[in-house]
Image (cartoon, rainbow over all chains, first blue to last red; front, side, top):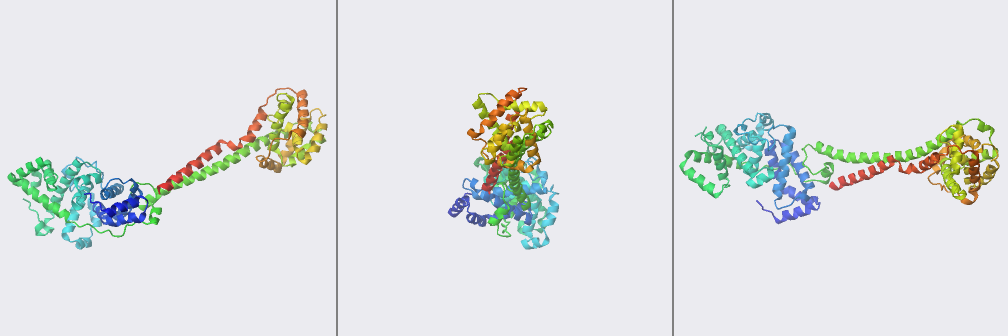
Length: 208
Length: 338
């Protein structure tokens, strides 16, 4: 995914010379995506906003280090790393580290007792109504994934990044991306099946 | 549940197949199996539904504009690493580094000042020390009090040449004398001789001082007379010893003289002009040689000399200067990084 608009290139080059306005042009282009990813990983509005803001500041500070042609991935890597830092800091997820999750097996889905309090605090009824039932159910199942699985699902399925980009952003190998994505999808499917009674008919999954 | 009937490898293959991420051989192999294995097909469909559901999640809108402002950057300074989110943490990190640099700078500047004053103190204390030593010298000196020397001493210690100035003058005059007389260390010999009698340690400078002071003060108007008087005053048995206590007493009891002494020290030109100066010290030196030759050690004078000049290069001073440079560099670096 190397769509690299000309104006984005100019904005980057100008921002690399220290032009804050140019960088803010990039902020406007990517802030929704950055916040969206941060929210889906962190599952908390306030935390996601703080992390997004700080990640953008960090990106501005080191934009002169940016090389290559995929600014979006570069920026998302900063956001994702900031999310992991936040998760580690808050110790909401014992499995927050990308690397110590390997080999944990299938058991991690719904082993997320740690997620339960987080869920309870952030997913208020008004949000469920606001977003619609289906979306709420999906978000709910997403929340129950461990962080390292959730990151990959968010990057690959929600944001549509390729495996390579997801690997680059999350700093893991391609093979790990594949295996995590597979397990995460499998776990999500199980979750959605459990909640299938809440889903519209067309999304109901048979317990074949 | 049917889910568990498939191996993780099959699940991974299905997942990758959905994303079109399988190699052509793997892909055709899987497609062949899909035709013949209903379970695999069912799994693929349920997985596809799941992925479609997740993909249906909308991208969220940012709750506010995250555009950066200069104030934001100033407030959230610091290194390039992504912060651990809370602004306070980042702010604290920034402040810690900058404050450290500023604190180092302040401490270094303080060190420089301490170093400077320590240097001064060093000089002063040594001089004062010798003056005190003079003070403690026996009262026999009193008998020997000679008007000339008295005058010379009093005059000189009131003059802005005072203590350290004198010391320097003494040593330089000494070397001059040496040069002229061709005699090594005459003044030192005299100095130590005088001291040895009294059993007190580093007195010497004042001994030549009494005379030299006068000689030096020739340059100032007051000195001329004093020098003459000093010459006359050579007659007593131990004139330098007689002069010393007075000089010491004067300097020791008169803090102003001290202050003037070291205040004037750096700026004064220690080299006395040869012409009027040489005579009295020469005489003193001669006398000293005749007088006493016991334990000639020039250490005290040398010590005084270095002390007088060393105040500019105290270790504290050096460390302080290095600290100032280092912290300024650190500050500049922090600034540049912002």
